[in-house]
Length: 202
Image (tube, rainbow, N blue to C red):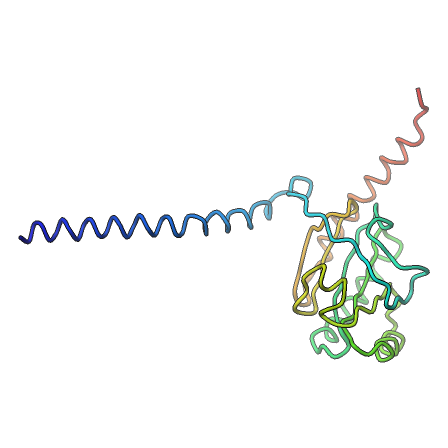
């Protein structure tokens, strides 16, 4: 009797183990797929093309609305923030430092405001010397915020010279190292393009 009971328990253990494997298998595949490429060189990572910028509610410090297509060949640091956001205000000196440090490099810093008061946003930008490109998106439901699925700020996205999303950070994070690598690659691509343009056509 005990022997039969023991064998029954063993069967239940194996059945539980089999069901657990079936349940956790897809989860393991999802986690594996989501982490795939994170430790790979930039050139070898799966390409995730950044959504196109759109809308035109309000632009500052730029002659015309920007688009990723028009910025091809340059690295783009997309910075989502708001004047009412305490951590965003704390991160502002860091963003100012980045804009100044990489001035003249193939880098475009674009800050996207999630404020709902456009005049307050304009006053804040002017008062704090935010001289790089600025866009007023009007909140988390704004067109660009929805495209990038932003639900927390400060939130940055780093896009390479090919328009491919390379990095995403929530909070004030050190992105200078990433920017240096991508800017260096952008310069290499620019040099190759110039060399190809100078070659005589056969």
